[in-house]
Length: 263
Image (cartoon, rainbow, N blue to C red):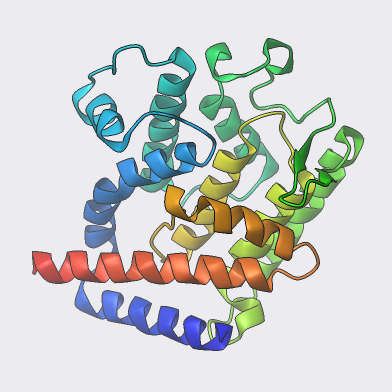
């Protein structure tokens, strides 16, 4: 099943590259999807602004009445980070320094934090964090004392794997590498006190962007299934890989349709 999806991903990517130079169409497509990416990534984290309100805020600079300052800042800061990543992805590194730097910008405003005492943009967590599984059990992330070494290992392993890519081998495909990174950072390490999901999805997409793929995003309607895939992928990333493969196919198909309409 996943082999079939990987072949479809490769075919779609080849069609896109045959139709037009990558840079020209990347810039136009990125402009199209930026607000969708920002809206959906923040919606997954509980942002209550509607899609229409998000468009008015980010495109027309119209502030929705009675909106919480933290929610507005979440969207504006995320969009600014996304502008930077999309414009400079070829020179952006998969490194601890870059992850911390982008997290610092993403979460720089105190109003974005639910607990003032946890305010620590760009710094690894100093308190334990956890989540509640759908079965009611608590899932603990790594202890704060374990984060630095785990992040160093994750970055080293990811960059090593990126040097050995083979798009015809599922285990060495860029999507598989990005999925391993995504699962390890968000399901095991959870390196920061807040903003993990957003920064994790940004860097998952940075891995894909650097290898010539369009960004993927998880829509709010897929939120429940997305969270379930974390649980199902505790020991084996296959369920999450299958889920993200569908999202990448959707993004590739959207980009292909976008280019064909413009020609």
